[in-house]
Length: 103
Image (cartoon, rainbow, N blue to C red):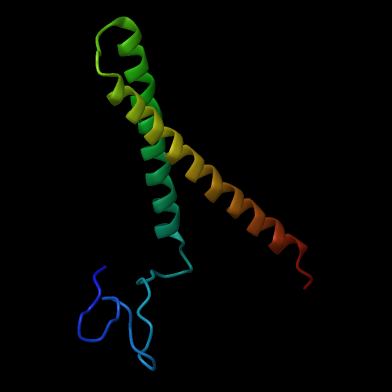
């Protein structure tokens, strides 16, 4: 985001009184978009984990000489997995909170 030199505001931030423009949402009754989003990200994290494992195996076998590539792949997989676990923990926490609600 860049700062507009004439107004001193960040681009993309609305003015007071303007309606907020959030993300476009699909039909909440189906939940397909959220489900698809989670599945896609699970697959991405799984792919990153597999790539990191392959990079380590290649390094041990002598096929890969560049340790920075191996370490980068491992760190990307680690950060992606940690983020996935944080999202999972928040979902479980939210579900438990809903179960504790009195009707």
